[in-house]
Amino acid sequence: MSIKKTIKKLIPNLLLRFLVKILNWIRLRKFYALKKPQIKKNNLASINEINLDYILKNEEILDTWKSWQDKLSSFNFIDFKGGVNPGDQRAIFYLIRYFKPKAVLEIGTHIGASTVNIASAMNYNQIDPLTKKIFKTIDIRDVNSIKKKPWLNYGMTKSPVEMIKELNVSYVDFVEDISINYLKKTSNTFDFIFLDGDHTPSTVYQEIPLALDKLNKGGVILLHDYFPNGKPLWSNNYVVEGPYLATERLINEIEIDILPLGNLPWKTKMESNKTSLALCLKK
Ligand SMILES: C[S@@+](CC[C@H](N)C(=O)[O-])C[C@H]1O[C@@H](n2cnc3c(N)ncnc32)[C@H](O)[C@@H]1O
Image (tube, rainbow, N blue to C red; front, side, top):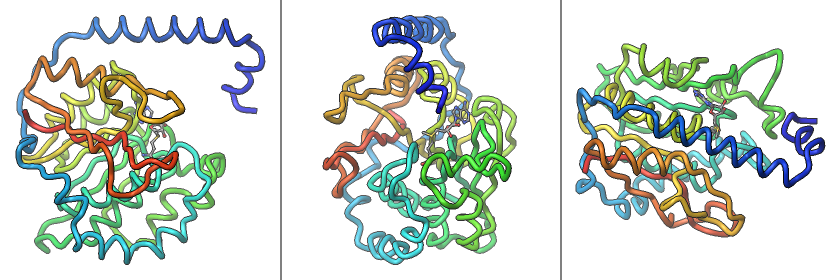
């Protein structure tokens, strides 16, 4: 039985809700106590340059998305837990195909649902042959651990690294680290940064300024679990507050803005087209 399930069994519901409330209150206190970040540079693409309709309805990208389907379905992302949903996987693929980043950073590898789509989209992108493609994917856990095989607990038959090997690409590096530590110490810079790790307000509030410091000119940051106005997107009433709270504060402090992807031209989850993906861009 998982730790979550054991705790749920042992602690009465009312007490559990009270404890969660206290935990959230502590989290928020920690978040509001953080100092305003000092930004050295802001290389983000401008929000005025982005036309989501153009990106998501692009016929050329659609052709490559179609030709990737046989391989993608062979990985059996069917009854999986915790990875980005199939509609979001498609949106991420389209964004990578459109922006054509040479260097990508992903925070939060987990089962590799986003990882394989990013790696594949990068493979279709034609770039200057002298430039090396880079894709670093970071997780606080060893997502490819041979001993623990964590992917089996989340409904996958292959580890992220096994799936990447099948794509025959040489540019993907799996890194086990805490996002903030990695962002502080890496000497790499990136054109596209996907933040899908720890979604607490404090972490996202620190990750974005650090990500800005590692971003190349015209780069973008993509957020997952961004719930506009901190409100549920789906009928399950589920909300992850962190990315919204962190960015609301940052919007008032530094020159960024958020462009939620909103309704995609295809299904995401719970029979809807809604997505929690959002681009962080220059105001
Ligand atoms: C929602 S999952 C990511 C899903 C993944 N993008 C996919 O599509 O399969 C979040 C992941 O972030 C990792 N994580 C949580 N906090 C982190 C941190 N501070 N630094 C790096 N990774 C973190 C977790 O271990 C987990 O695997």
